[in-house]
Length: 364
Image 1 (tube, rainbow, N blue to C red):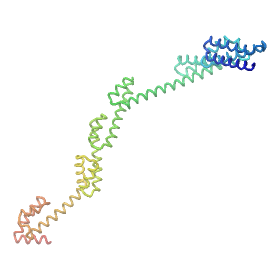
Image 2: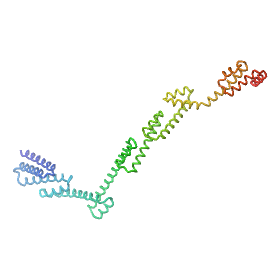
Image 3: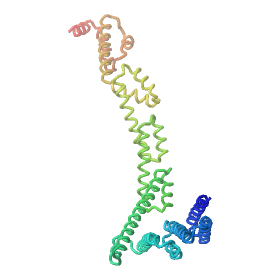
Image 4: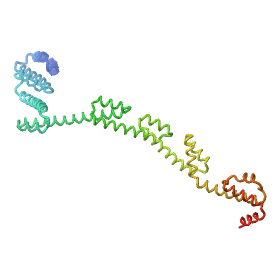
């Protein structure tokens, strides 16, 4: 039964300490926890002698106050200092020194932070603040304050850099997300962007629109698509016309390559059509094909003209062509000058003497 009473009393004492620490800013709760724990100890130690009871009470009281002070030290070292001054006599002598050292450390750190805050408001540069500290403090106080101020200025630099980065990101988000130049201008003005930086953003936006247009125009299938891209990206008409000219040049270059490889004009135009060419592009491609093959066409026509001419002369000589109508029907490829020459040849063939001369000329 005695063992059970001690275990129960110890459990009540532990709960009392926990409750006091949890309610460290509430004096009435702390006192209630202290009274509850002491009563439990007295009840469990009945008949064990005054000295034993007194020792148990001082140990419990010291433990409770130590836990309350430790909780204060987490966020209020000066509160711990004030509380200790009120309960110091209730704490065993051997426990006082560690508590006082912990409070001294905590309050020194807190005072250092407070002084550092004051210096941050007083000095705008780190070097000026450190110079004042070294002239005004010495020993541990100087070292602690120097460290604190250096840390504060480092944090300040980081905060300034992060704020600048955030402003820069908002600026570029506005630029890259704008629908058009006028809306971007209004947005940047509303954001309080400086005139110089606003001009930079507007120039970037214009350049980006030009790049997007150029990329789209490079892959456009038709001139109409390029015109549509120009309207979408609000680029000048002169830029659209230049892109159309470049598009035509690229198309004609491809058409020229295909024309060189094609077996006939019909095959070539069919291949161009199968690639989705418009009527205008088909007409352009046909001109390209004939331009590419002009030397071949010219040479073939010239040979045909010569062959036709000599065939007509033979027909005149053999009497198969006897009048101008027959001559004109046979002269499909002859020029006007050549036809006039053949007409004369026909007339001369009717004169026996001239006919003999013509025959000799042909024979030779």
